[in-house]
Image 1 (cartoon, protein in one colour):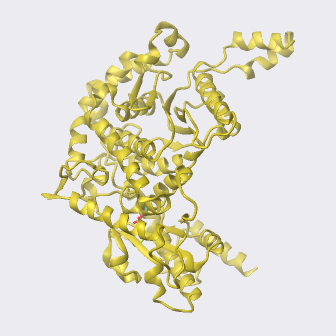
Image 2: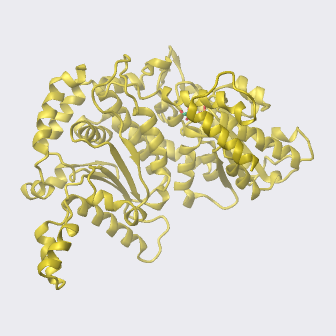
Length: 549
Ligand code: F6P
């Protein structure tokens, strides 16, 4: 037994979970008229309603005991103080420093990192102003109107999601495009609509070794040079790099004076706050990027300063542990009723699953409890017409997060009221369902009786007790988006602490990379030094046969 599962608070929760299986959300609400007030928490205009969870005051008390026992507060302090909590890579974890807006120092290895952070922000600001005011031109003297970010994973998902979410804040004339997939279709289709003379490429890669990004960057470079009549000198006007690896940037042919740096203490999936956010600043303006940082910083302060009982990321993290480890949930849906957030779940998938998809603890011992769930989602109302059937009547317990703005950034007639009505209806339907008696009465009102009614009845019952959180805010803004992303970052952190795993490495992505490098020559017809497994050999032979046909 691990020290976690053997701990008093874990054992108490396991016993308590036995009771939870017989709870009904209808009864919990009926028994406590102030349940909404007691099970909701505020951060500025952001409200977290967690009253529709299969949880009582006792559940929360036991979960908070667990958080204290696992020293969430101590780990939080170690993270923001620059301690090397990413032990398997020997690194500090300081994305909070990137949005640290106070004048106080943040020290790593005895050195204040804030002057460097501020220096890169100042360079980004200057560069953005030059590009957006068209003072800095392309090689042929044209305005640079289109930015193509070439990156993948954390060097793509965060900035792409933010640019999509905040598109209503963008001014015309500064377009941004994202290329991530090594599938040629991605780059080819993007470039097809672009004029090389007006295009700026941002090659974004923490390591500057990622195969997909380097391949796309090399092809984009060739495309540019060809369109500039073979003049290599054009590269300096049309390519900038964002990386921690100056040597590789130089080797690629980008002058380090066109490079924006960041540091090994910034994990890829936590990097949108660094120079990896450059496309955001180029698209929306630097002031908007700073508002995003401000929102994240405000959430960092909430996380650090608010007692655990009212701490939004802590509560969300603990409820996730409750379902994953005690009530058997293995997936978690994120359902923004806000079309601006249509890439939010994609960003959270990397954030959560790359961080907490681990099966050994910090000391390398196999865990004896479930860790990170599968995270997925789509915007409402679209999901309602696709997969909500399973949420309502399927056999799995899937806790959901609903996110919604009280007002639209792009008001139009009664669209937003309809959107919100659906958000409210879905959370209520999941929680309270429709009982057999209610379904029977409804069918009877519709004129059904006897065998016909009995045959249809089981299909019309909604079991309810399907838990959800609602995150409700006034209106999406750079500031609010910053705080929402930081909220989820800290939620993931809290869960990693409880599970005693390192949320900041990602060794699980390496094997596939190694094998791809080994297999690649075979696709060009070369013999491999070692024969691949039977399935891979068969698939390679079939590819070759299909290519010959
Ligand atoms: O393969 C996973 C990963 O290492 C992510 O953690 C990272 O965000 C992504 O690849 C891209 O890495 P890089 O920014 O170094 O190109």
